[in-house]
Image (cartoon, rainbow, N blue to C red; front, side, top):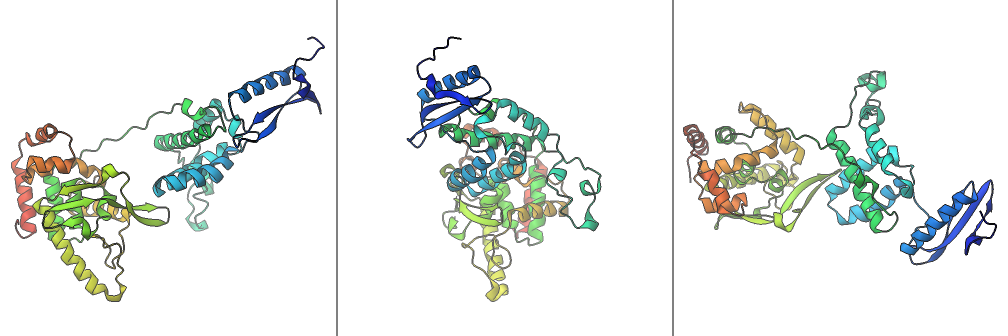
Length: 409
């Protein structure tokens, strides 16, 4: 190597047991500052010095880098996710960061995180018992501990869905770090994870749905109208629980869906639907109108019985006996309990949406009305369902439901 130094190489100098160098750069805030590089030999530092020069020419360069844990917990979650996304999204992302990302990658410097780091983290995560890692069994009272805390690992490994969710959360965070020029590339997006397999569950037939509703009507179930709306309109759990009486127009026979009930951490929130596309006026079949009138009479009775204990909550249609919002998880549990009570196989509440179209056929709802309820873009899609012949047992099931409600009308 020639003893004559190149232009600008005066910024490379001996430092402790090696060499150091600096380059003047423009930081993301627009201010000028020196960024340093270190190495054991002059050649090594010279290469880093050249790389810094090239990076400085491309645009702003951060001179101080946070750890991944500091970036996620103190900036990304609080300044980006919390103010801009739905509360439920914040709760989900916070859980992934606290339980799965920070314990393994938190000490890594944000700008030093590599594809290999992410891949090794996901591999390790899939083999770590979360009962041991999170101390779940250890948190129980000493006389109730039964697995990991007493030396018998329960091998509670994360599911594929948890692995994918953890990677997706890290990828979303690093996307913002790239956009704000803290790092140059998103290493999490370069790591592929196996897609979780979705277990297919056979939805109820119309006959089974009819039996469920008939049993609920016969028992004067306070959530009967909710089950009717879920099965006949295909509404989601949160949409049903978020309905208000002002959303129902009994004269025109329409229902406006624009709010939902959500559990976010320790709060139950009554908030607007996720997107404007989710808001819609839905026509109400006769069965739904009658069920809602029954529900109005039930709630009036609950209000009188509760007296001063009644709490008015946004004029909600479905409430507890004291007028408070119904916990979404409780509705799911009650649905399973009602299904077993009616002698039916238990399916997830969300799977009832698949029964909706067939039930509208059995209720003799006009195809154009059904198209609006099902939110089909083309009438041909609706007519495919209506082309299927209804079984006699389906008609019988709807007949039993009508009898349980005191006849049609």
